[in-house]
Amino acid sequence: MGNIQGDQTNFGHTTISNLPANDSVLWVHIVVGIMFVPLGIFIMRRFSVSLKIEGDECISSRTLMFDLIPEQYCKKDLIIRHLQEAYPVSVYPGFDIEDLQIAYFVSKLTSLTSKLETARRAVTFCETYMSKNGKRLTMSPYSCGLLCGLCCCGRMNSLDALNYYQEQEEQLRIKVEEEQTNLHKKSIGVVFVTFSSLEVATIVKKDHTQFGCGRSNPPTSSLQNQLHPDTWAVRFAPPPEDIYWENLNRSNYRVFKVWLSNIILFLVLFFFTSPAYLINLMETLPFLNTKSIKDDLNVNLPSWITDFLPTMLLWTLSALLPVVVAYSDWWLGHWRRSLENLWIMRKVFGYLLFMVLILPSIGLTTVRALVENVLKSKSPDSEINWQCIFLPDNGAFFINYVTTSALVGTGLEIMRFPELIVYAFRLAFARSSAEISSVRREIIYEFPFGINYAWMLLIFALTVSYSVICPLITPFGLFYMIMKHGTDRYNIYFAYKRSKINKNIHGCAINCVMISLLIQQLMLLFFNTVRANKTGLLPPRGIFSITMFTIYSLLFIVQIFFHSFKGISPIQYIQNPYQQSLLPEAGRSQEGRSRHHRPRQFIPDVLRNVDVEA
Image 1 (cartoon, rainbow, N blue to C red):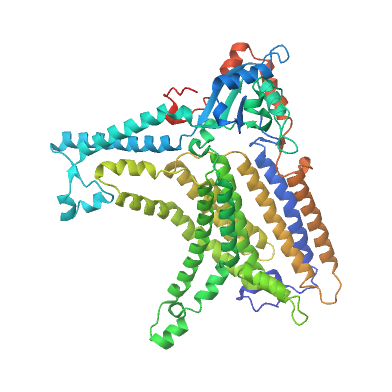
Image 2 (image 1 turned 60 degrees about the horizontal axis):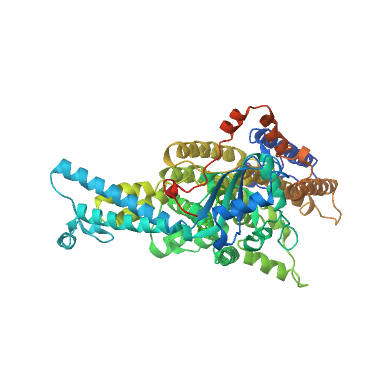
């Protein structure tokens, strides 16, 4: 409808900018866009019912994690004595400690154990090779020995592989035993205590809640001056399989690493280019400029090459950004797998949303250009060209991006080129064919939920944000979701090992969906205020858009930061998780309760069969 943007063959003819500013049909777009928000809340609540997300801290575990205990006094008998004196049975009936495990610095032991397992598998391979072929396997005892063995120089320095790996296995076994013997001296001040009931664990957790200057007021004991329980950080323990035991120790450099990582990311965000700027830059390159090629080189390249290559570079740049963010977060060394995925998802989604959606939508290419534009706008002779915010070509740009992600992006995710490159790199550094099996074990990763969730939510945000002002993007967004679903389903089932995530990552995804709907409202608001404002007065549509956007934004902010309006929240929380956890307890026999609440072993895998004296 309308004839502002060219004829029916012009892309702008299918966008909202083709309608006159005073056309009454625009009310249909406004009403439909506003109805998307309650519809999104309804769908998200239906989705969150099966998740059973608790509104407060999850207190379904009877195990508490005590942190910041003085390392020289972090011993099993001292901790038990302190808790028994602080919580006597006469005052706290039913108080009992079922299990207590002390956490140690196991990073070095984990590394040595991994190397020992590699040597053992190599010995087994050499013995099998000798029994099948009737001869002994030879090797080069250096990195890249597998490749060097193919040349004459590598064969001259070859050794007997079985003897080499047997000697290495013996040396590593001695180091592992020494590390296990001295492990009781490497306490990190963390203790996992499993109590007899959830009620007791809740009381202890409440008593150690810190206020004011970071101190609590728990019950005292005769070991008060040595253990300093008022400085302990106490929380409900996550599942043992969710913990990176090698990252559990406190590092003095962690705060420095966090600041350094975020500063570098900010600088990359400030000076790095967005995909839109990359396309503009590539148009100036001679080998991508068809006219320049014809004039200077007298070579005619097919048009699909000059069109496909910039699109591929566009997707490659966008795919590289979340990898950089993810590796910066992995470098920090999170001690929980689920929180690692959650933080990667938050940072990747925010970074991509800003670089791929927001900046190109306002006609800018970098944050630096945004700052320069704002500073220049303060001069009396300059003003911001708000008409550039909703160029018709923006919709075409994002349709191209979504289609490229659906076809090329999902195809590359199935091929898993990054894992293939890492596998080839590690295989090149193998010393012999006996280490190939170990290399294959090391490249089996957990499914990167944080990166993939953020990627899918980004495309959803692009589709929803432009679905009203540029309707043609909707079927392409649906096509991407279908392709992405099939790709992730295959990778989760057959390509990756099981991941550890918590329900908060789904809650974060729900919030990202609502942010996408608010961005859609913001786009309609700008369209109805800036482009329709010719007389200096806001039209009724603009006033209505501002009012509804303000109401939705305030409700979302209050619900996120103050946890209010849970009745209309997109996440349906479980009410009173503490009472719900205790209700089944009352109807069970003592035998049933002990069988159902069998305490988990908070012990690293490398210490399962090791007796560490605390």
